[in-house]
Amino acid sequence: MELITPGIGLLFWMLLAFSVVLLILKKFAWKPILNALRDRENSIEQALRSADKAREQMAKMQADNEKILAEARLERDKLIKEAREMKDQIISDARQKAIEEGNKMIDAARQAIQHERAAAIEQIREMVTNLSVDIAQKLLQKQLEDEKGQKELIDKVLSQTKLN
Image (cartoon, rainbow, N blue to C red; front, side):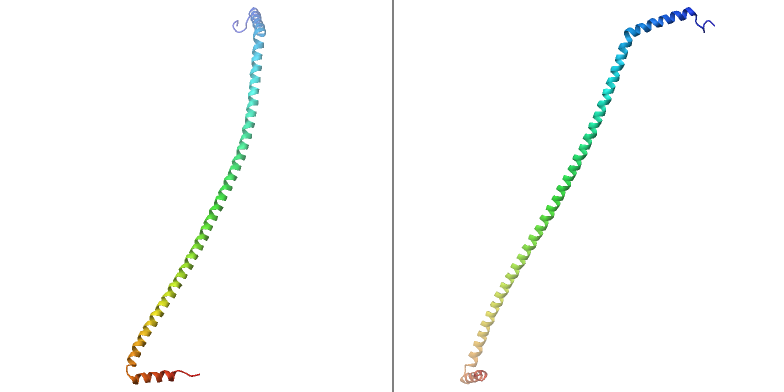
């Protein structure tokens, strides 16, 4: 049982050695260890504060970025809308010009057709007149070859003519 229960002398020397080691540690090691722990605690606290500040700055930057993106989207939408309106206006103007040009061309073609038609009618009238004169001349020559035919023609014309 001697192995299980230590003797009083052994306890005394162990307690004395422990006290000496404790005093040496207290005098030389305890303050540097506590200072190192305090420094470590302070550096951890500063790191946490820095991390909080960084997190706040990141949140602020993210909010600013979202705001800038929203403004950029609005600007983009505005530019797209303006471009569409400009495109529609250009197309509308081009259609209107094409319609006006088409109407001008149609009117010019109608006028040209009317002029050509009038010229053709005038030319046909002239030809008919010439042909009529030629036919009448040939008929009159044939009828007026003898004196009897001349008298008959004169009587016929006189009878058809009304006197006022």
